[in-house]
Length: 242
Image (cartoon, rainbow, N blue to C red; front, side):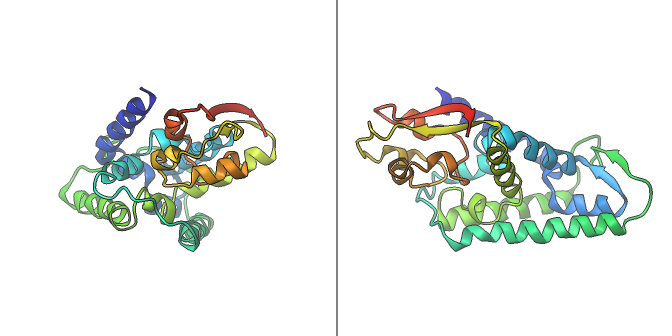
């Protein structure tokens, strides 16, 4: 039942993507910074960071429109994504982008103002043919990695939002904030591998259960698919300081 609700939330979020896409735009935040405007994407990214201090990457697992799109692509390519050096690409992208935001804001003009609906038509992102060209370009950017490399490959390799939450959850853990995470009692594990097959991020959950590292995995999006699939109830959601 939980996974049905989760997937419905992701699907609904993806269907709203033409309306909300500018609120996740890495470019629009730079354009707004030049004018000293705190726009919608700036606010959304800050909220992602703050919430990740306590909830980790729950946003990715339950609400991200890009995640919803990629989970639809799993019906075409359901292979686990290969992890490794490619995972670092998103941090390089994020680092260059954040540097650009800071520099443009420093060099920007005018007084600082807040406009959550900057460059939107009554709050709607895609409201012209030109905007649809950009929209479908972003869709292809997210779809192709998942089609070629497997489960949520864009999340692993190029997502500009994931580092906010990885850094936020790491800081929350370092400050010993109460955090939601998935915990394992590996004494009951029978190594059936169902958790691996269920994981929407294609992670080796079975190995992390054996190593006792699942609670610290930065690629885990707290979707709970492994929790719901485990026949021995080895995995469970926990809310505690670490």
